[in-house]
Image 1: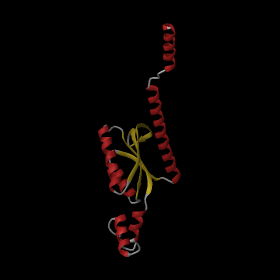
Image 2: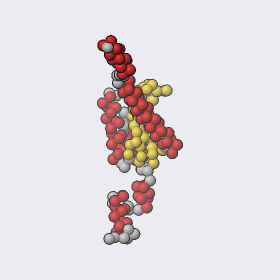
Image 3: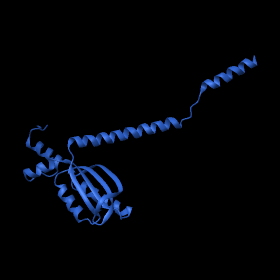
Image 4: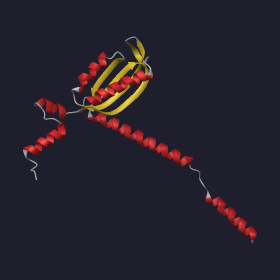
Length: 177
């Protein structure tokens, strides 16, 4: 049996965790460190729904292909802008929350700036308080939907009142005697 502190075992563990062995210290830090980001994107609202969905799917693919994991996507839809941006009065808002290494932000911002359908964007790192807030909001929404579902189920069930039937049977038996 192999000793867990042996170099072969350590090398296997590193390959399992990181794939190929890291080339330098910076690569090790980049692989190990991930942050939770929020990326707010405003797209041209004049696009068809299919075009908007294709832009959203491209952003999803970009995040997942560069080592990110999408936590949540909020589709706010078409909203009136506070001021005109690139001759647009209405924008389509989408907010992405995801875990990713820090190197992804440069790639995302480059794609955002080159995409003609995206009129404005903002990327931020979420701190622990913000993450807790969003997680709490998500669990509260799930709990609320469950309670609504349970209440509709209980309302839809017919209530059978057996006490009324028993009195009718007793009356019938008195008459027969």
